[in-house]
Every structure is written in C-alpha cells, then in structure tokens.
Image 1 (cartoon, rainbow, N blue to C red):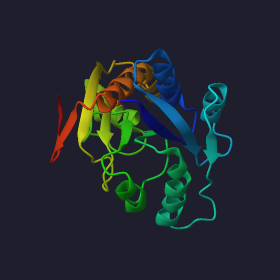
Image 2: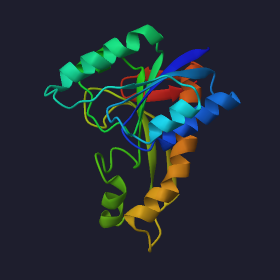
Image 3: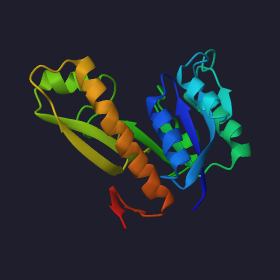
Length: 201
C-alpha cells in the first residue's frame, strides 16, 4: 500500500523528521505529501522544506472556534488525497469536524502510557507521581482527550535522578521508534479496530 501522509505540527518536529527519514528509507510504504503547521515559524517546517515536502501554514489566530479552524485544515488537505494524518506535536485539540472527515485515519503520539498522564507535561506528571516506568503511546484520535484506541505502547525506566527535561530527552528516541512502527503497521493494513481494542494482524 503506497499511501499519502499529512503531518500536523506546531513545534520542532522531531517526530516529523523521524517519519520523513523512515519514508525515505522505505521503512514505511508511504510518502509525506504535506506538512501543516499552525505556527508560522515552527522549526519543524525546515525539516519538510529540506525534504522538498510541501508546507502549509494555517494560523489559528483570529479563529475563535476550533470547528472553523479544522474546517480550513480539511479544505487544505483535500487536494493531497491523504490516507493518514499524523499529529506530531500539534498543540491543538481537534474538533469533530476534522476527526469525522478522517475517521480512524488520524494518529497521535503521547509521551506517557495512556490513560495515565494525559495532556501537557506528561513527563513532569510521571516524575511527580513517582512512577517507576513510563513510556509513550501511539493511538488513534477520537473525539475525546487523549482517549482513542491504543495502537502501540513502549516502556522505559524512570530514573531516580530524572528531571522533566532528562526524561523527555530519553523518551524522544523511543517515541521515534514507536511512531514509525505504528505508521508502518497502518500502511501494511495490519491494524484491526474492534471497539477500544486495536489488534495487530
């Protein structure tokens, strides 16, 4: 399955870069067709430009309703024939407008073992709670908050001397590996969703 991916970013785009590299290596049988950012100077846009991937900046400023913004995203994506949307540090909560336009075709990576520590500063939450292990989760996006069916989870140890910064940095490599694996499985048509459960065929 030779698919087409859209990646939505707001920041540095390290997971975007990992996906670009994986597609270039042939690890994922798809190509990144477009990168959309809601922030005009997001550093991740440079990764897309360096790989000659089209970029679109859609600022959310002045748009009060999430639904109105997401309608603009849907329109922007239409010409690209997108099979999968990957959220990679996209700092916006999606509305049903976008989610229903691409049902079970939007995935996100979260730096914690969901349902534990949803939302922002997941690593800080993990350290403050005192957990011994944490990790990352790739999941389908539904209309809840970090609540969609889980595709993959990987774990790592939380060290006694970890800070939010050190834990975040160590988690990044694990995130990259896990996201690439999940997207590869999607384009191999090996993911089967039944209710909340995702089976790998």
